[in-house]
Image (cartoon, rainbow over all chains, first blue to last red; front, side, top):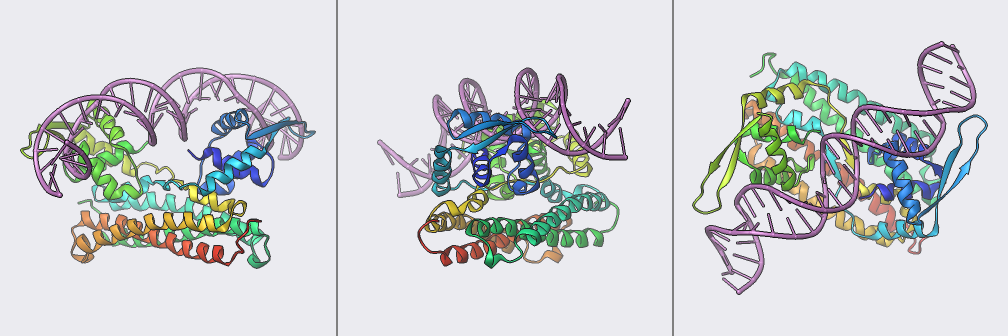
Length: 183
Length: 183
DNA sequence: TGCAGCATGTAAATAGTTACATGATTAT
DNA sequence: ATAATCATGTAACTATTTACATGCTGCA
């Protein structure tokens, strides 16, 4: 399980509250790791009990108090250990591909509509990543090492999204070439 | 949850036993939907209880008896209904990207090695898909409709794998350009 | 006043993994 | 003999999702 390590990795950049971790996962690295706030709060408790994290209560004027977690030494050690250990396979679960797999069972028009909706989400994701790249990674050669690594992740997100959209174009073309009634 | 529908989709092609479903998922559509045999056996029970499947005991001379499941009418109906309903997002969980995200924490050599191992798996997957395409989808225009849809899925697998490998080349180049000691 | 965003959680249910268990047949 | 492949499962545990619950601040 790597939610632990996703959280440790996020906190290795800067101390954050559970809420902030949830947001930064959702808005950034979320394309390759998803987690709900409930899951994150629970995991933060576990990680603190293991001694990987410590938290501090922070009062705020304009918002409710929050618990800001930071990486303890043993947390950084655990993260480094995990990075070099054998990597388990990526998990992909894409229901849309199951639909395409048996697409002949329904009217092509219906799949075209499903594709359209799905595509919109992907386009939005792509645009978010491109905006991040423009904003933070415009001059890749001048970046500090840490950000060069982060840039590789953003690039993966962009490339993946574009690659998917190209495939979607092909699917769309194919669906449009089919006669309307289902087989 | 779409394991249900992944199984219904697999069985819509031809009746199969749990063991065969597990194998065909592993060797084919497994890149976008993973499931263990334990999970499949349990789910087959559930789906039969729901009336979506029926099974027949089949004796064999050269192997133990098996339970061959086929799609009932209501199962096909459920599958068709699901295809046209709103599609939930793809789930990607890629621990390797977390590692790259915080790659500056360790010696580049170590990540290079992890990348090498990971790449091998992806290359193997790509080759398996390419073999499938050569064998079954060599002449896409002559294929029956059903197989044209399946071909789109195989193409997605190939494209995804190639796209990942291109990115891996870039990562490798970057890692090799770094001085050996960690920052 | 009502809604959106900030902030943290518990509880219940479902999904998925890992470990264990059994037994047949075929090839080395 | 013994390992590999075929074949089906149970049990325990872990991970994840969904529903519920609370309360604060700032803005329209």
